[in-house]
Image 1 (tube, helix red, strand yellow):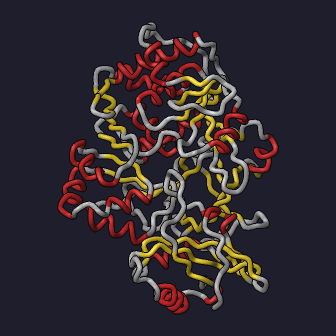
Image 2 (cartoon, helix red, strand yellow):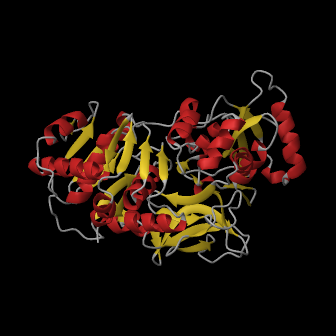
Length: 489
């Protein structure tokens, strides 16, 4: 079975029901099906075939959904590109993926033809809306998702129809998503959070979805109160912004909401607690990757543990191993290794990287975590982020969460800096809430750390910054932090 057959559960059974709201217009499942059928007819006329790549460089819009569905129906491989990327990043993906064409509303540095989405829609409107039948199976590649490339050149992760299907069916079951839900989606569709979780859960469940072009915190309360969703997927930065909503509005929103899901970056425990107090809902935090979609989730019914990403999803096997490949004891940190139907097929045209990424059938993620005695996993950070100082392993997330609990701290990131004696030492980058009156904050934070943390974990410097560099999903880009030398202790 391929994705199209799963989507047909809604395209057929929910054909006349409203499927999508976008920018004041609404569309039924039948209309969404017909639009993508016409576009698929056009792509065939433009000589696209199963296995060809189609790169897409668009903000959230109806046309992006049309293109994705047309690709799925034809077996064309959908390659979304982050709209924040600029020439260097774009050129790498467009060269590496070797697309047959690119869909973009703006000119791009591409040797392949660049098709304007409005032109595609206009030309497709006159074509028949019959399904162009293509024989596909679950192992057919559906998408290539390029990694963020923070530790080297960005690689394309090949996700199959089976990968997307297994992921969505897990989430529909474990998070109890159904056609009765009203789903507010503000995540970018070029990312697996919006695409792999958002679009697939919507299309298979048959729920009603309002798609936003982007998350705008100034309009967040109005969007919630107007649409009255039951389901929302967000990233930690969104949940921080939602705490700005007035208490009486937050209570009203909490009254009609069923589930808030948080992912793509760690949700600080104090934000979890503040949100639960304000909205009356504990956000459900989970753990996924571009290469694996969703792996671990807090339970829908059961304890949603602050700071933890929860329990492995059905069919997903998890091992925590030390640097020698040995299992670690509960409570000790180890690298996360994963196996399951959600795991990607490999890196596009990078057989060497694919072989290096798998050990005994398990994908080694580069993420460090601990497991509690009752099976809950807690992420400590990336293996590449671990600071080895004088022989001690330091996990930045522990220090970051402590700093974010301190008065005057809005956000914090901790990274390693070279040190002649210890090899590396931690350095803290802090966004303050005090504005210009923050001169004493570094001294206060150092005193707090010395009181509560082991001496080797105390940051060598506390550098005040206006903001932390983040990607489109709100994840801190530590390689872009200022390279300021730590000051003396």
